Image (tube, rainbow, N blue to C red):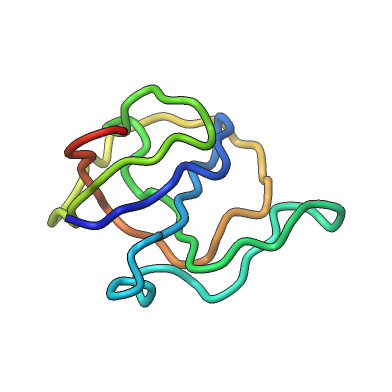
Length: 95
């Protein structure tokens, strides 16, 4: 399991910050959602957003990498500068 925090969520993007130093490589080194926002570190986009549970930004949780997510998920067409690195994950526990 990998410890992480939900740092951004919109209809188009779910951004997760990896909190476990042993797994920082799952995310990209630096990411800023907008020019006036904070820079986050070790962040990735969730590639299977329809399988990601509802939770508030800032929530800490544990996840594992899974093989492949659903590919029939509809999301909005908004572009909001998501992290380039992407992962398919399953949330295991929430704090």
